[in-house]
Every structure is written in structure tokens, then in C-alpha cells.
Amino acid sequence: MKLRVSPPVFKGGLHDARTATSLGRWLGLAFTVCFLTGLVSHLMQHPPGWLADGLPSRPSWGYRLTQGLHVASGIAAIPLLLAKLWTVYPRLFARPALRSVRHALERLSVAVLVAGALFEPATGLLNTAQWYPWPFSFVPVHYAVAWLVVGALVLHVAVQAPEIRAHWSRRSPGTLALPASDGRDRRSLLAAVGAAVGAVTLTTVGQSFTPLKDLILFAPRDPDEGPQALPVNRTAAAAGVGRIPGEAYRLAVDGPRPYTLTLDDLRALPQHEVELPIACVEGWSRSAHWTGVRIADLLERAGAPPHARVRVVSLQLRGGYRVSEMGHRHARDPLTLLALRLNGAELHPDHGYPARLIAPNRPGVLQTKWVGRLEVLS
Image (cartoon, rainbow, N blue to C red; front, top):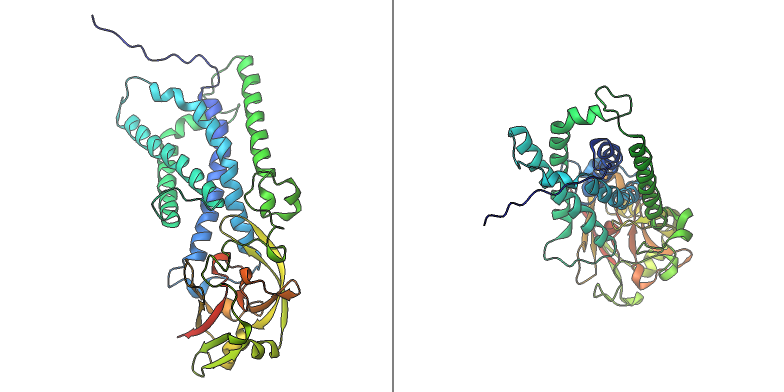
């Protein structure tokens, strides 16, 4: 006896192209903002050689804004993505599976798009909590999959362009008349999704937009928690540094005229105070008052050429980003300091005692702590 399996029948009125297009507009916007700001973040952290000297140091809050938008738009995309998938999933059961070359391209783009679109916010969300339950390196894989998702999205939009145009608005030519109840249900669904987006945004964005910090419920970082009222990602113990004795500390500055300074020597140099944010790739950021010696003054004493890059080397024994480089725009910016004090007090060991880098418009992972050497690069 041969059994015939009939495809499932979806009777819901909201599994339609109009609803999918309405949700797709907002999801596409969230993905676009997330991708562009993520591209900025990647270039700021890993600039190609030709761009290293072109990275701007102003506005000082630039990276704080772009990375905050990156994480916020990625989190906002989650309820939009789930609603979009709920709307279109009946099409996965359409028969025949492949009807034409155009349909095959659509299926391929959708498969890659769905897989990548689920992967990106899931891994990004776990990154904000600094939890990595996978064997691969997060940054290069997250970056590569983002390009894959964008390519699949462009292909998907190109294939679906006629249907998108037909349902872009109520007045679009070719739009079919739909039952009034579907309109009410669709508005209710969109309102619920909008409320979900607003809720997850308001309860997480305070980690970077500090006026809303009292609304934080789900963000992994409170911008007020940490030594000296500033969060910490890597402690001195985790970096293998511990407490460095001030009397044993030496800063080596390598250049045309190399020299070495003790901590007392650094304290005796002209001190400058700046207000700059620490903005981390996980999405949290916090402004603070920093006091220390201008990097430009240290480079001038070493006889560094005006357009020289600088390599900053930490005393930390383990962990990533032990060494960072700065282009001349950051190195010569008067806001860039070798900081000795934070919010009026000596640096806590977890914030880089005895000396750390603080520079405008720069990712937190590149604000090197426990600085032991500055190297002038030709």
C-alpha cells in the first residue's frame, strides 16, 4: 500500500507577501546599519596598511557611536528576523521544490541568507557576553559571514524585486485587495514586533547610551560597574600582570633618540587631562577623565618624524592585543595620552597601572594597558 503525503496547508492570513515585505523593510534597515557599522569596527581594529595612517582621530566619540549602533541594531534585528521567518516559513514547503532557474536562485539565496542571518546575531550576542562556545575565532568568522549574508541578501532582493515592488505600499500597482481582517491582524502583528524591538533596545542600549543606563535589564555590562566606576574586560590577573611595582616600572621609548623613563619621571612631565570614552567591541562604553602625558610629547623627545606610526607594547604576558599600532593622526592628536590617572585617582591595576594608552575614536581593545614600550615606526 503506497502512502501519499500531502504538503501542509497554511491557512493563516499573515503568511503573505505584504506582511513579509512590511517586516523586510525594517529588517533590511537593521541589517544595513549593523553591516556598515560592523565594517567600520573591523577596519578600525584591523586596518589594511594603506589605511592605517588615514584613520581619523576625530570625532573623539566616533567609535563609541558606531559600535553602539552596531550592537543595538544587531539586537533589534533579532525579533524582526524571527517575525520575518515566521511569516515566510510556509514557502519552505512549496511544491515542486524547484520550478525554474529563477526559483533555484531564490531557494539558494534564501538558504544562505537564513543560515547566515541566524548565525550573525546569535554569535554577536554571545560575544557581547564574552562567551565563546565554539572552536573558531570569532572576529574573522563573524566578519566573513557578514559579507556572505550581504551577498545573499542582494541576490534575494534582486530575485524578489517584482514581488517587493507589488507589496511595498498599499498604493503599489499590482497589490491585491485583501480582507479587512487581514489588515487588522497585520497591524497588530507589526505593532507587537515593534514593541518587542523597542523593549530589547531600551533594556540593552543603556550600556553604551548612558542616559538610559537605569533601564538596563539584559545588557551584560553596566557602565557604572568596575574599578573606579569603569567596566573592565581583561583584569591584570587574567593578563598575567598582577600589580606592577611602581618603583620597578620603566617605559622605553624607541626612536631616533631612544630613552627610558621611570614612573616618577613620567609624573614629573607636564600632565594633561582629557575626557574620553572607553568603547569596547562588545557594545558597552563609558566616558571618563584621564590624566597623563601626551604621546606627541614623548614622540617629540624621541625625535620621531611627524608622520611616523607608533607601536605600543604591553607588559601583559598573555591574551590578545598585547601589541597595537597607531597611525600618525592618533599618535599626534593632543587628546592621546599615556594615562597615569583615572577620574582623579591613580590607575587601578585592572585599568593598566602604572600607565596605559587612551586615544580618541579608538576601539577599547586597542587602548593598550600596562604599557612598557613605545616604538617609532618609519
